[in-house]
Image (cartoon, rainbow, N blue to C red; front, top):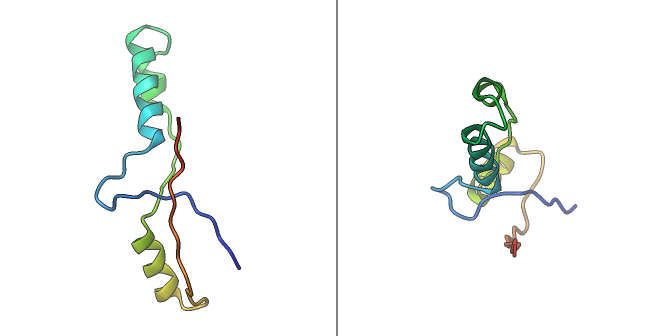
Length: 77
């Protein structure tokens, strides 16, 4: 079985494209395009695990064995 999961490369830095979205939305508040209260109540839960976290969960759960784990980055340019 092959699973593809969106994750993050740096274990200590959870910044992602979602941070870019957050900054863009906040800029829209500053420009008066979005009400700040609407932004404050906007919630889009999303988590990108690091490869070590995925490995730990798979090993602790026990239903699967991990034979190989590869990571790769996709350029946004």
